Structures are given as C-alpha cells and as structure tokens.
Amino acid sequence: MLKITIAEFLQGVADLHQLPKNELKEVLFIGRSNVGKSSLLNKMCNRKSLARSSSTPGKTREINYYIINNEFYFVDLPGYGYAKVPEQMRAGWKRLIEDFLKRGRPIALGMQLIDSRQEPTPLDLMMMDWLEYYEIPYLLILTKSDKLPVSKLSRQLEAYRTRFSPQLTEGSCRGIVPFSIVTSDGKSELLRLIDAHLNQSQSQKKEAV
Ligand SMILES: Nc1nc2c(ncn2[C@@H]2O[C@H](COP(=O)(O)OP(=O)(O)OP(=O)(O)O)[C@@H](O)[C@H]2O)c(=O)[nH]1
Ligand SMILES: [Mg+2]
Image 1 (cartoon, helix red, strand yellow):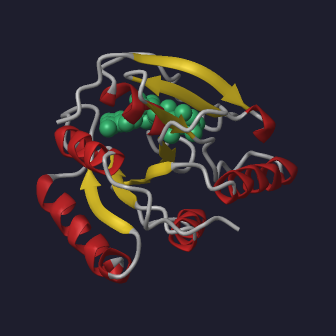
Image 2 (cartoon, protein in one colour):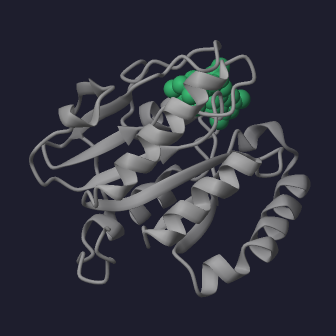
C-alpha cells in the first residue's frame, strides 16, 4: 500500500502558464467549497495543516500543488459553488478548471468529493461530465461520513451506486468511497486506490484536444 512519507507544498497556480513543467502524475482533489478537499489532503498525508482547511468557504482560489514522496502531485483545485462569490469570479473558476483539464496533463486519478449527507449539485454533475469527457479515471468520495448514522450512510452509498451505475460500469468512475477525517473511514482504501492508479499505464487515455 502507498505510504506517504514526504509531503510538501510546491506552489499555487492562478495562471496556467505557471503549471509545473515536469511530467509527474497528478491526483486531483475536486469539489465544492467546504466539502473537505483540504481536510482529505491533510489526512492522507498525516499532516494537520499542510493544506489550509478553513471554516470560511471559498478561500482556496488557486490550484495548489503538493509534491508527495518526491514522486507525484496532489492537486487541490479551487472549490466551487459558494453562493457569495460574484458571478465574474465563478466564470473565472470555470474557465480555469476547463482550461486545466484540456491541457492533457498526466492525471492519474480525479477525486470528486461530495458531502455524504447531500445530493450532488449541478456543478458536481458538470465536473463529473468533464471527467467522463476527458476519460479521466475518478472516484466519488462521500465526505464527512462520521456525520451520518451507519444505516443512513449505507443507504446513501447504495443510492449513489444505483444512480451512477452507468459511470461505474461503462464510464470512468472507478468507485464510490465514504470518507471521514474524524474516524479515518476510507483512508486505507483511498491509499490503495491512489497507488493502483499511479501505477497504471496512461496508454488508454484519450488524447486531449
Ligand atoms: N465532521 C467532519 N468535518 C469535516 C470532515 N472533513 C472536513 N470537515 C470540516 O469541513 C470544513 C471544510 O473543510 P475543508 O477541508 O476546508 O474544505 P475545502 O473543500 O478544502 O474548502 P475550500 O478550500 O473552501 O474549497 C472544515 O471545518 C473541516 O474541519 C470530516 O470528515 N468530518
Ligand atoms: Mg480547501
């Protein structure tokens, strides 16, 4: 299983010209503001505040690159869907993410985070459509699983599996994993899945347009 021994913040990217030039594989953290992206990243690295996690939604504005084990990147994408963000900024977010995905970077895995207590938002579904379109393998991660009673969580998981069964069977979705920073639910499974995708060849990936 993957063991994360070194994790360092590399850089924040606001303009895509600043993207790292080397070819290290990338694992993306995607989701709306406050869903738990930075918390998940910290938990995977056993660090308290490597990625700033805050109770002020919408704080992460840049694409934040972390270099892991000097081997691959964790890429924390800016959160979306925060109601108080001005329209202009929302359009900027959309352009940044879409341009980023279009570049055909060596993305080993996308991690699409959704709050386990909620339904996917229209922007979550749009992100999943983009991941499908670019044939980027991804996981749905149901965050904050500690906030649901076990029976409700398993019902929710079943509902997600049913709803997204086309993506799971014919698309790029590689699994649905409940996760919690409180109970560590899902942590070892995620480490295993990240490891597996980092070691998979890129050959089946569609060429970016
Ligand atoms: N109970 C519980 N709280 C969590 C969990 N994961 C995150 N949180 C809390 O949710 C809040 C938001 O977490 P962040 O990790 O900052 O969310 P984010 O997706 O990085 O948000 P932005 O950077 O604004 O896009 C924080 O107060 C976290 O402590 C979890 O598994 N369980
Ligand atoms: Mg964050």
